[in-house]
Image 1 (cartoon, rainbow, N blue to C red):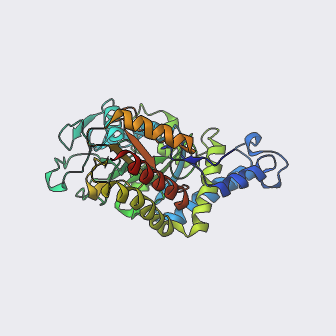
Image 2 (cartoon, helix red, strand yellow):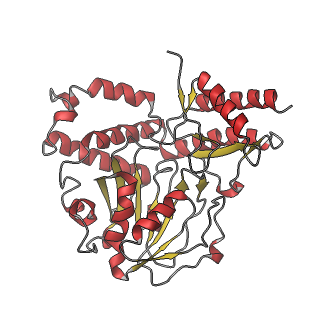
Image 3 (tube, rainbow, N blue to C red):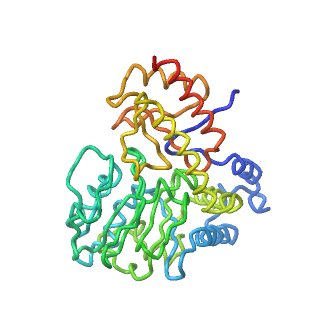
Length: 364
């Protein structure tokens, strides 16, 4: 079979080295004689893995001691409900900074549990992040929620907002572990694993300990951060295999040089694509403002209005070369290249060459 170049937004590509590790450990995990897939979550074998994965998260992000690390079922979408259920009780209201489809979904979910203040004016065109001086923040909010990288629209925060002491909550699903962040500036960081750090089925949550013990009475135990912390993320049978894969991916990141190396690689990969767009004399068009263009998810069109026929031809030609999952999200159309951590520079160079060749053929 010819090589496949997977630019899917998620579940995204996993490192090939990790596949080899999984293959070797699949039927005999940690010399137990059986697979992790059939191992009890109460055994020392799994409990040791649970601690091991927490430790690698703490090392990579320099997580301060007063933050707790949780592995929860339900992915990022489950945390859209968990955030208000665990935090909104203090004042009954929360601020949501909506910069794309996923932060909009998070705000919609939060409205079920309290009052949501929309920090930015409503729009259906997410191409920028307004200057913070224009934000309508509520000093009475229980927390301020942002999505640091919008997978669909390709908008990525290049700064940490100043929330004037109100806890900052960040959905980092799409750019988790792609660069260093100052965890101490956040009250909560969370994200589904299936973009940069593993496969679907588990959410990684990092929560400051003073934000525990605030859950609404209606909060299900499965989403209650305090209940899960007290049981060390083994409140029930956790998504063990997804947690295991996340751990092996995070260890791979460490071996590659950690988050500084991931950030350097992300910049190189994204620059390859954006430079071609900028140098194409308008043939390719990236709608997002340059200062907030995502390094993980790169949406672009052929022509500023999107030439549907040419885009269809582009995608067909790409698939013929093994360049797959480049079709833009159904909500926005066009083309999207996701260049998460496991996507290699060589793979992005192959896409860049195809983009150049397609431009030469069709720009006349």
